[in-house]
Length: 338
Image 1 (cartoon, rainbow, N blue to C red):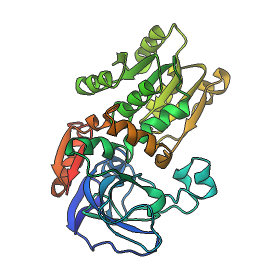
Image 2: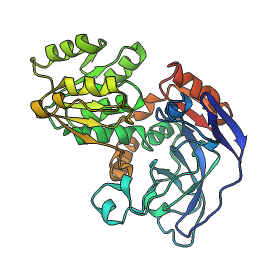
Image 3: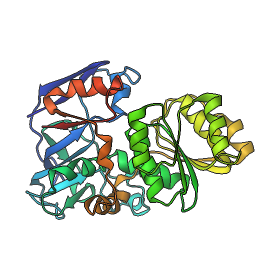
């Protein structure tokens, strides 16, 4: 088979790789129908996270089951499936608490930007989609593998509730998904912080009531103006840099909460923006499996269309262009077709 391998900063290649095989009776092999590039993949592509050796890359997928291990009972060859970016058995004590991202028996993928993938803990990880979804639904289902569930986790962690005021920091695929999540959870006002017209348009279609293009002091002043001078009840941090985390904390009202899902690239969290203002932070790696059934139902019945975050579709063989386009902000999120 073929798949993406990252060799170093700015160097992603489409290469021949060995076909995956069943290693454990709880494994499945899935042939991808679609996969994609994640904003978190760009940390390695940009050289922020070092790459010491060539390694397969990618963690999002939808596809058709080709083979299952002897212990797999919930999916079978021929099933169309989606799975989260973090495998889990969905039965361990941590999973039972709804935190499948930290499954005691979890595993990792050997690169999902590929034609075939071995899925550890298939029963707990994969969700079967009834029948064979129309091609138009595939992007929306693929978004559930990571970005939509991550945006949802930000909103849940921040305590978004009916009638609340929400600020979303970050206008990438996760941030836009956070706008959609906040709207679905009943927020009365959703303020998207975005400087890009194409992303602002998607944010508004996802339920943003206001857009703030300013940053720094000007951006916070604008948020204060829109929130009666106190800040938002809930702020979704969907970037992970020092600048974005500080912005999120400053945008939160006293007693409010930041839902932090941006992969952290920050040395210190400024305590003066938290303790004295009673501002809390919750979040982390999204437990995709906890949200997957609910969000899949919303996609299948047309209530939400998170697939709109994909604004570039390429053959998998052009994966390097997908990375370059996202790195250069020519694309929000690149969908790859094997």
